[in-house]
Amino acid sequence: MTFGAPKRRIIRRLRRIVFRSPTLYLPFRQLRRPGTTLTQDTELVIEGFPRSGNTWAEFSFRQAQVRSVKLAHHSHAPAHVRFAASKGVPTLVVFRNPDDAVVSLLAMNQSILTPAEAFKEYVDFYSAIKACRSRYVLASFDDVTKRMDAVVRVLNQRFLTNFIEFKHTPENEAAAFQMMDNRGKEIGTAVGGAISRSNPQRKDPVANMVRQKAKAAIEEVAAKSARAAAHKIFHNLRSDIPAEAP
Image (cartoon, rainbow, N blue to C red; front, side):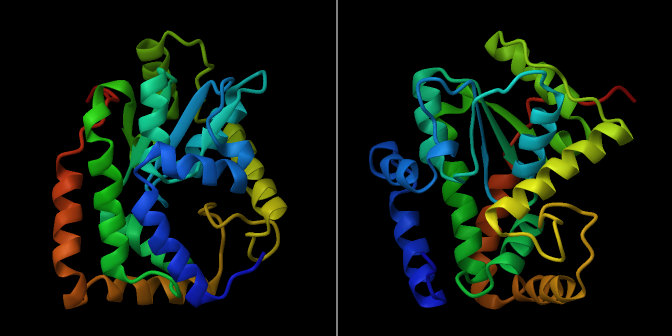
């Protein structure tokens, strides 16, 4: 079903009301995206605010495995993290500088979100999972895009799993990007052929113009308070991935 922008805005706002609660949100998620929602056989949950490296984390992880691993991912809802934590399911949460994440999100959803609303969603997401902080691995955008091997290593150590580490070779990265592009084509979000919106190799002048507009939009006075709150949250987030030796 295709919704117009006004209906999508309403749905987005309603979602924000319930997306903290596993009881309220997860049945809806299961109906809408059953293959991505946590079930009894889920082996790993990957979640985070949108445009924070979620897709790369998923497909670089998948590329490295020699078997199909049951993942739950991309709800972008704290309810998913909270429910996984309550069940002891291995969980990876990703985060990114809010300016970068929000600009990218607005560039994709300019008709349904204001900058202030996007920053408030950022605050809501990470605030809502603070209470279960010890029960998931937290990794930054740079961690998952540049050191996914270390991210998987920490997951294995924390949850006593034996997932295979992703190696950042040109061949492996190309394979992961291809998987992303294939998924983008399957779900109808590809632009310019089979290039996923999460693939940095995508070249799209229109998208770049929209991104520049989004960069200007986050400077609006109306977004100032929410943006400051998001940055406060961001500066208190601490990655669980050890820093590389100098």
